[in-house]
Image (tube, rainbow over the protein chains, first blue to last red):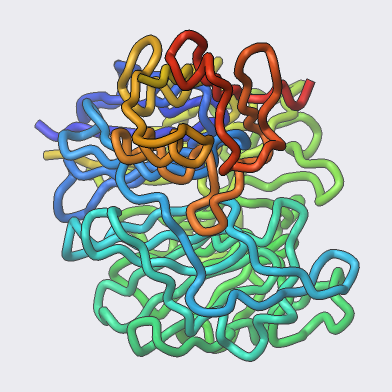
Length: 371
Length: 98
């Protein structure tokens, strides 16, 4: 029988939630790496026992942990992230040049074909790759080497490369997104990159339609349709049907189009989920009601999903990497909140129930569907 | 024999309990003690001092013999009591953030 394993990264450790395919009863293990910030955990698509985790601390810096047994035991692997060549500068908040400095790993993206191959998105924004299971890391310097690099600026959360999407049909194509530089694509395995921000409109930058500078919060792709991307931008939910070459807004009837998380139904590539957040100055749900919004039409027409979610006095946030879906026949949807709740829906969002309520603030949620 | 006391998170990371005992050849210094520590426990590389610059991480301190050695030269000899193993070399996570 199938089962699911939910990997939860929090501000004070990692937790692993497991259930059978019914997704009614859950076992909770953790905290793993208690007391450490766990920005992201993700399993290899080709070897679900292989899981990578980003562990960091203001005191002790960055660790990468690796499990070869589905999260039962872990070993630290390589934590040396050194920029290629002369690191150079990017633009600081006050407009002055600022040296590129490694701070942490925000996102780990295991290869679709090789469990020893994994990408890391870091702050200050750069993309690293390991081909030996996370022991050694090399920068793909073409991204920062894009001519716009010196003009990238940090968002409020830091200048982080937080989204990495590998194209299942084209191993040479990778999408990434950076706050606050925007989205980029490579078609040659990471040697060269181009900004893919045409159609984005951001009022918080001097030129609202600039080639770079957009605060992209997250991007999602369905594996059956790799040229179609959905984006939750700082404000605006966007869609591209040409691999990011151009974008159209699909916020439609959302009550607010600010937010962080966005994901896609495992079996319906036009069914999208977002969690609208009131605004960039008030990072909590509108009217104190925690509502996931679902579009079954690829955007523009959205319905609130509220059954089982708090509909009063709720002032949590849902961060960019804190939503995921499983691939069971009835698609499961999961998200974690800064208030420490992890909610699960076993019916594609129609109804929800908390798996846990009192974890530390949730930074990331990933799901493994196990057979 | 040099005794090193690690902060709890680094003990967990290194999978040790209690003090760490290290053999250091020559006159022990911060650098030679940390080199020996990292050689024995390579998972601690980068957690106490930067991989490239070898600078002490900002929120860590080095104490010994009721003194703060954090701002001493990494190549200065450690106190005799540390060199003889009578007193430990403490690696401390600074109280930061309230």
